[in-house]
Amino acid sequence: MDVLTEVFAALRLEASLYFSTCFRGDFAVRLAAEQRRIRFHLVLEGACVVTVPGERQVSVAQGQLVLIPDGAPQTLSSGEDVSQALDLDEVLSRAPPLDGVLEFGEQGPSCRILCGFLRFDEAIDHPVLKNLPAVIALPHSDCEMPAGAIAALDLLRAETREQAPGQAAIVLRAVEILLMQVARQHLAGRADEGFAAALADPRLGKALSVIHAQPARQWTLDTLAGHAGMSRSRFAQRFMQRVGLTPVAYLTQWRMIRARQLLTEPGLDMAEIAEQCGYRSVPAFGRRFAQVFGVGPGQWRRSHRAMS
Image (cartoon, rainbow, N blue to C red):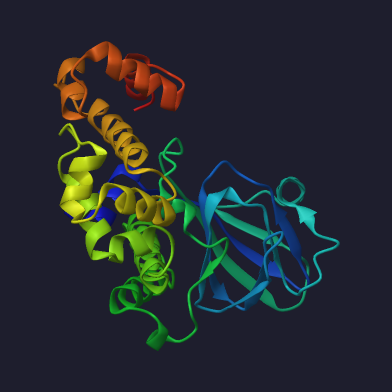
């Protein structure tokens, strides 16, 4: 069972574009915090500095992509001084985008940036998301990236050079692939801590795999420890250290994430969904779902269908 694939499928990542920019001369534009969306910026021409409060500033060159997870506020600027930054709303009021292009500034070198975001099921708070850094700037050198990320970034750059039918769809899929590539690389680089360490640990990895493969099974701490080949106390301690949740809490979290997936599928009644998520009764399943998400499964399903 590929746990990471399961997690990304559950998140239901979907990329969208805001606009492209053409800033001229000195600029500093502040973007407010926005839900938990993962925002991205691809520099098409020139260069800019990305500033996220509490993090080091990142210089982004032409052809480079930067991602900012968790909806953090950020400033795009021509230099490191952002003290005079204008809010994006003010910039938009002065110069509304025309044909998807935000032009701002009168003279000087131009900086063109493609700006967008990745939305996902924000109610899901999986450890994979918590392990992402506050700012992700893809390296300047291709030799520092995996082959899949290089290919996706090359495709992204090629698609933004000129307009063609289907361009937007290709750009968005490339960004989605890049985020997954970056997350996988980041987790691999941190295999000594956090959720990455749990996946890399041969024993904890077995426990995570069986949880994801068989969420309906009536797992206990003892049976999960048995799959991991560890004592009950040692397994519980190491799992908590790596994942940040107890084994039973992670099992419950994954069952609820799985429930949200199943509730979007047609043809499944509530009893079937409850059973596939390890609950013998619909009321018990409903109570747990409401406890985790603040709304019952039936109401959530109806609201999801209304928005689809």
